[in-house]
Length: 123
Image 1: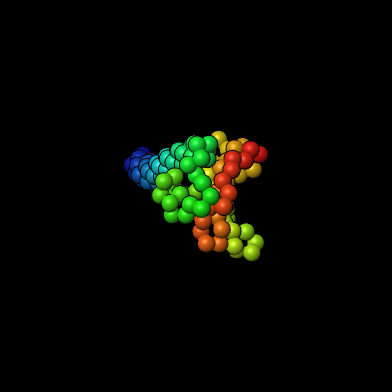
Image 2: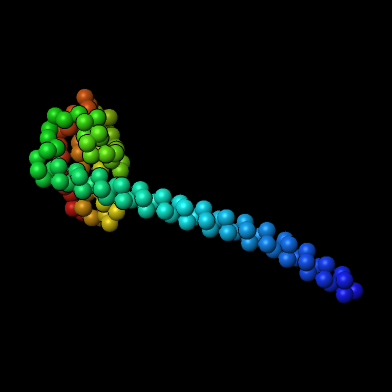
């Protein structure tokens, strides 16, 4: 009886360690994904600060191409076409802002891919 109890306890411990290892792997993966998110937020904030500075200095000007702006200032957080598909709006925002509240930079391009408007928006 005592041997059966010892064997049962050993088997339980063996299976329990697999469960803990599986849970640990999930936690490690979650930590990695959160680190990636923080890295992405930092990149978005850097791009926003560059665009903000460019707008303020007049370096971002009407007529520049999408490619030129993307090369110099980085990818926008989001790019949205208007309802008729002729204009495209790029949004750059810092980590502290959401899409609904806070400061953001908006760049609006024509159908030909040329910058038409550049402005800072506060919501």
